Amino acid sequence: DIERVLEAAAAAGAIVEINADPHRLDLSWEHWPTGRRLGVRTAVNPDAHSTGGLGNVRYGVNIARKAWLTADDVVNAWPLERVEAYLAERRERHGTTA
Image (cartoon, rainbow, N blue to C red; front, side):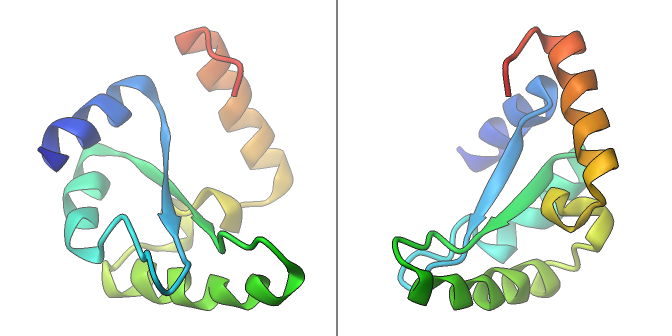
């Protein structure tokens, strides 16, 4: 039940990955309107196991675009200072280490 997973992610302040490996491409673009409505943030991950896999990030960016996500929704599109502030606030609010 992906909606319940996204609700739990939103409640925890979790960042949900878009796995950009062309054999994976999850979380599907079809689920992101729900995630966005709930305030879930994402990070696009190329799932690279070698430097050759770094180019896969473009597939994840395309998933985000197809889902109508913006740079504001994608944590690794933010300036470093914003990422650090977000993670610090998340640690304070939820008592997490990441």
